[in-house]
Image (cartoon, rainbow, N blue to C red; front, side):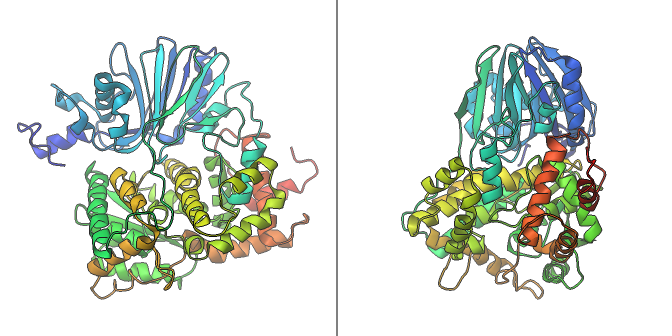
Length: 591
């Protein structure tokens, strides 16, 4: 964004010092509750990994709020909370277009942060400005008597809340709420069942814990002390059309418009701050397009995870990185590493790791790579959302009947509520209704509840902000308007047609020509070898009656979830491996 028109007296470095002071954080707050300040601060300590650069806690009327922050750009001593004598704000994430929305530019430009500007916009326009916000965010804005909570339309950033001890409590992660004395850890059996059957939660707003609610993406809550919180929508991902009822754009038009919107989204993600950028990279279609667009604005370092030297992704990523002249950091993982990463991921993820009809290792692979990137970087881009918007899941969209059959086979173990939900969703039917339901499942449920939850928790576990550059308001509206036939070619088994068209034009130099046509596996392939080894070793020593290795692992991971979050529950990152856990489980005197 060219800021010279707003402040012509400031040179470029001054623009950046003013406009790009990001405060990305975790927070916990209580409104009108009897919870003590010490208990709130203890809750913040449980999620302090989200913001290692500073903490603050304060009272504002009947609101007590505590925040930790990840400072993407100096100065690092600015308050993440106080806006004025009468208002307080806590922002988790970033909003790219705040300056376009600010009615009057700040007089003392160099003293204002993104958080201050959001408060200024909210003070001027109130909640009516919410649909115009562009970015990844969850925030609290309050005058001490009334609170406004809001979450971005995709659900990139999390926000949880509950009625507790006569008041409202809310936090960036469930662990902060679960740590409060007397807070119930009772599980919601329907949510647990849906996660184990489908792979993610089918019930928007619900969580694995009965007492905890998740603020639905694209919704806000505005309530005063003593009022019941009521969610209201402000901006949602559009519903996808039935096959044959969407926009029948020509292939050239579809590709050109997609490229225009994606290029603008990548530009915002790259230029929003001057911090060095990393990229979760595989050499595949989605990440290669991001790389080619991003490198034109700033240097980008690619990171790739693999458990073997002859992996197809590794070979292709080397070719693409060398052809484009970018740095590629290769990270290896073995069986022992994986066994430790699974436990770490399970604690941060806050849900059962249960693949259901999907592969359960994708999030673990992302987590392992985030650990490596977070050692040297605070900002990374990823390709999350491309598959959901452009129908990239080959098994889901090319052979949906296989996916549906796997759901039917699992229905016997589902609770009645989950069974009824699946039957009512048209997922178990044949024809265009099933195709639309599968597309909707991936975009409106699996994206936020599984993929983006995994991205946020794994990044923030290591002080890393991850920006899913495909998840832009305009790009999502465009992609969801397109007819299925514009996005996939079932006759030739090709997915993501607009993205492939872009890649064919952009990647013609030697080493990149396969980007547009390579059929690649998803992220779990990065750890396929060591995951198979681990499952084999776990099954070899197992005493449970699981029918296969995956079922055995499902049972182990469910027990791990209970151990970490229910009984006894861990308030700090665990320091043991999955093998250690299984050995502990087998001891009769396990606590």
